Length: 340
Ligand code: KG4
Ligand code: ZN
Image 1 (spheres, protein in one colour):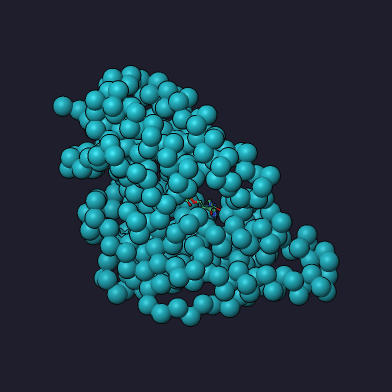
Image 2 (cartoon, protein in one colour):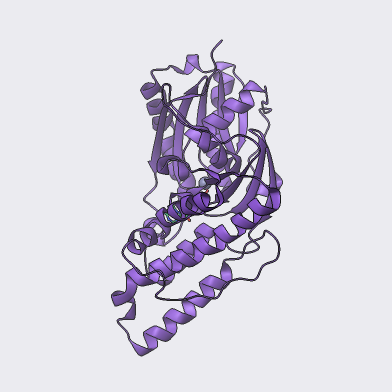
């Protein structure tokens, strides 16, 4: 019997829905919330309200594009956390209501686990290579930076993580210092393409083991820019490309040096990237280069599935469905990863 899973994502500022049948993606829709731009970051209250407005049209569109009716669904998967509680409540409540109405199970999904399983999203007939387990994944998003060993599709072991800012936060906070709008990561990526990565040098963090630190880089960036602006008020305007290229180079270096260390320590040569920051063109290119040097097999999600989306929730839901890992309808969302 075929398994048709609806995935719902509402952890932050994107309302998304997707349908996966027997492991193959049928549809993936997303409604981005532009209301936050003027505030320089996501406003939780506004995010919850926008999810309320968007969720029914987004799910309807995902079902229509998949050529399915609600009655065709085998289960509903939803993001349980981590994320903004008010935002998560919208998706989880919707999933519960739908499961009750259709008398089908609900499946709770860890958003970070889903970012990693985005590597397995594929359509029928698509030729795609997948990492084999165990594989090592560098997971870099707006709120998390982790080194994870995936023992199988459903079991993750965290072997390193940031002790302060996440990689996406480092991009976004430095972008804010340069007066770029939120989220600044993609804008830095664009400016960096034509800049000189060696134009500015920032101090490297000294963090033990496989953990990361990005907050020192942000402070170093802030002070260097402040000093340069004191000498030349037009410094920022005239050096945007070089500043972005140097900053991106420093972040990529922090991330990939720990990834290389983790690969050496674990002996794993199946290496993957996941999370919103994996959309970064500099990080993608540098990882591919490093992979060739070390003879790793490297896996990077398609850009559209690197940042938040519901196809990754549906694919994770599918793997959990196959193991009959269902949630109780009294389950509640959680804000933090360590509560999952
Ligand atoms: O995974 P994601 O979409 O949401 C979270 O789960 O946090 O990640 C969002 C983060 C933001 O910090 C954003 O600036 C960053 O990913 N990001 C990028 C790029 N695209 C998204 N950072 C650098 N370069 C990009 N191209
Ligand atoms: Zn995410």
